[in-house]
Image (cartoon, rainbow, N blue to C red; front, side, top):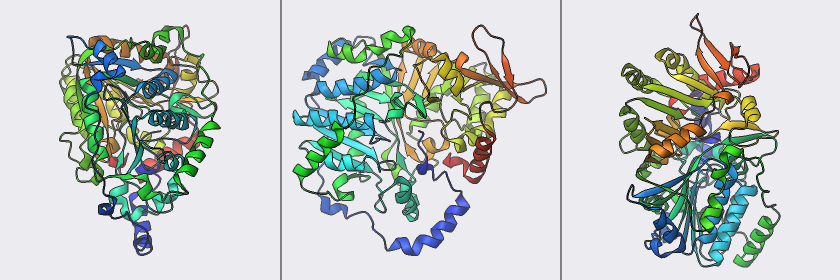
Length: 532
């Protein structure tokens, strides 16, 4: 899932939105609105400042060396990435801070909430910060879990009308488009201000390859310690204490007394089966599957490195920074890419470079910098409208000399480079930039207009040739992708190169039905490009 579905208001165009708004303005004006914030008497809270004295703090300190103020470990495999979060929750003794765009009410989402509840029962202070766009199915659990002592949940830019479904609450808030069109896309799972996980994964089954039939995502997280964690926690505090974060009880009136809510939560999570062990880890990736056990044994296997944390200014949530890159995550990425000397490899599920991005790429190519892009094919993407925005620039990129690779659902399933998909469909969700094989950026941001203008994002720029080369090996998806290039007539072609087989060339979007192609073109034509 991208940043996403309803948030983009991506299913209708600007003209339709204006028409709907005009027709509903009078009716909606009399509807519910956000409560008076002054009546909530919210006191600012902050991450633990003495995490070094905790068990996780001591583990983190052992990972830090003279070659950096932070330390990192890649988490490319789904189940170990999930279990690492649970292990951090188990080991925390003071604070747990969780920030996410999507928290589903499915197996993964409820198991994470249960782990947070268990930590709270041990006396750990738990703060959960969730964007409110996709919260409908998990709302009952979130509302009930705050009945436990030490647990707080806050919603970012919440909706206050027709909260029964994501679509209904969005539609009923179109008169507040200036507010609800700005979403928090950041991801963080931090324990004791000592160790944290950041990256591309939301908290739901599909982000951890738990969907048996349907869609699962290929993604990447990073386990971190040191200064980077402290700075990510500082950013979390700023979001948590901002005017855009609302206690869930102020938006969703509690049902029943605290004891009844706790019993209901316990019953809800008790019905969810524990995810089975993942037996589908390819042999070449076995060492990436041991992070949870390594944390439990006090040897997390992190690599020291210098790092720059990038987090979007909070006022992006108020819509006051549309078009202003100053101090944003996108500005950090752009600056790092402009400084490239030899090679830039971009991995982004949704890639809409815009005219400025094309000019930047042309400038890099003129300097002899190799440019590679890995993104979703039309058949793989969960956002056909955004793919249409990407298509508008694909020919230009090919002519500039960008090496374009598009993930194939069929080949990804057959090749199983990052796990076994079974009967599900694989799609790319990782957000990575690798520069000159010595610098990497990993975070929540997609390289598209919505990430740049409307959503807040976070990520870390890491100076490490070792991690850069690890990522390059992990992202060696050529046999799972179509290589998009120009044929002798100047038209696009899609070539699949499978090990031990002759290349197969396609002359139209492979694996995509005519209906999907039409859908992408219609949606892409209706929507403002900066919304994609």
